[in-house]
Image (cartoon, rainbow, N blue to C red):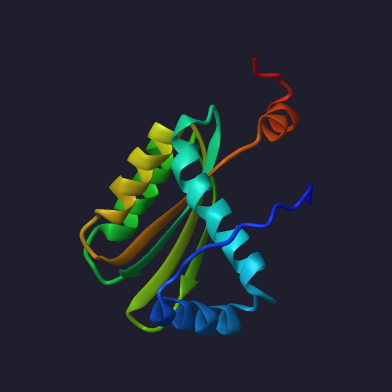
Length: 147
């Protein structure tokens, strides 16, 4: 890490107590480490939409008995083949499946695909996590440099 700068913050005692409990459960070794991670996470969540190239994971928990849902998921995969890098399917129990889909491309396209998947009838839970790709990562994987 580069040069560290000390910063002092004022926090409500109850909020700090809850934060310390979260730190203990999250595996962070101290408040500074936890706060740095939270700051990076917040900044990344706001910066990804301006990126040239981004990645996302879409997690779906769904009822596999829902008529037509498996076929619809497959169709979305074919329609958006340019954005979908991979997917993993897991049988959670007799009725429920987990699908994790990895996407790559322009942020607006990723959001469109993720929203489509999460909004399907029969999806019990859906969540997308987005991240910008560093320009050097885009260069190495595509073989092209970006201005």
